[in-house]
Length: 604
Ligand SMILES: [Zn+2]
Image (tube, rainbow, N blue to C red):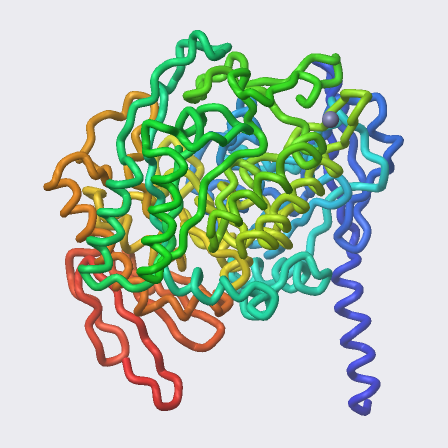
């Protein structure tokens, strides 16, 4: 047999393996009834026709391959980086919990799984914007399900899940790479390096940190749900524009030369005060003259300034509030956060229809903000944090898919006017227009807990998007210099985070200023915050060039010691333990990290 014949045989064998008879369980739910059937998979795909979904409410799909038994080798990994081994008798990670974002609200339509029977990546398609991922262990039997929701909208194209086999020894970095390659191949995202020519501000933003200064707010949660000019609560002032100027002067005097300041609550009514209205600039903080002076001084010292805003949450106190611009649900009701415990400072927030927000406010407001001299990664709250519900107002109807395209237009407008875009969450339906994400996951899981299926977080999302979208890994990351947990600083490095620090992050009764919080309350707090920012900035500069690289590998070298590798060959080793860790002729000190650059001519 010559080589050519051999390769044909090998090819046929691999096709035969891929196409082996494989099935999935499909569970169709309507009300309290569930109908289960087995469906054939072809080439790793289970595909449903749109008509299959017309008279049911939701569907669970569990491929036979997505099963494991307690005690088996392997793991599952979810889009925000939650990873679990098969150690539990029972437990569940559900796709939704009363509308509150949970662990498995998937910002990417993928999960990975390794069992003794195979290693694969599963990707939902066709209806991925209405899909969740659920993991269950019942009596030690694990299943991972893709859940498709048809209650609000019905699919208009074939949909389902496809599984791609990986070599048995593949880990989550290889799973992430497969999806990253697909995203690049279809042009869903471009790297930061590729965007530099069209977005020169990225060169500054990537190599410096963002400091969010929360200046003023009304009480949250608010007891005045429907606010108007007569009953609006008072704004509490934390940081005036003059005080903020003292901060940038002190930072410059302490040696900081680059950075971006994002003012939060600078607008009418303070943070979450009256969106989408922002003007006039909150008078208690110093008004428009104070804001102009802050921007001018910051720019003269070499810093960039951006202004936090929000084109999703709308408050009745806004002088531009019009119920006709709000998104309506399928029953014709105006959508709001009524009943949610997250009632922010402006009271009940209504959900603006993205089309009306775009038409009425976005272009105008972004141009006004740019005209003040703002430049950098413009932070617009919430956009990338949730999948917007469709709008059923007959005057401006939108499917979820159409709503999300308006997000793209908004983020693109932020790039056009201010230079870059920054929003709250990691949802990759805006991967093509989002430059930075405030937090990929909520609280980090670092050790397995008996009552949770998750063992720990790994940088699964970052292995896909590092080098394309800047991020901080967790909610804690925004205050990590003030954290009692030294691990918070190390997780920033392990997960390739670009620091964004948040001053006066006092929400929901969190008034214990100075404890785990960065504040400018008195001179001592001020000095401590300056020190923290300067230290974070200086430490970040030693690794900021990595933001231009893809993250290509991640593993534990030992319990509590993590290695992260980048496309240019540079690696970081993070040591969470109490003992120094030896690596390549060097010691990584306890509770510290080191950068390893073995490239030709590079020093350590
Ligand atoms: Zn609408």
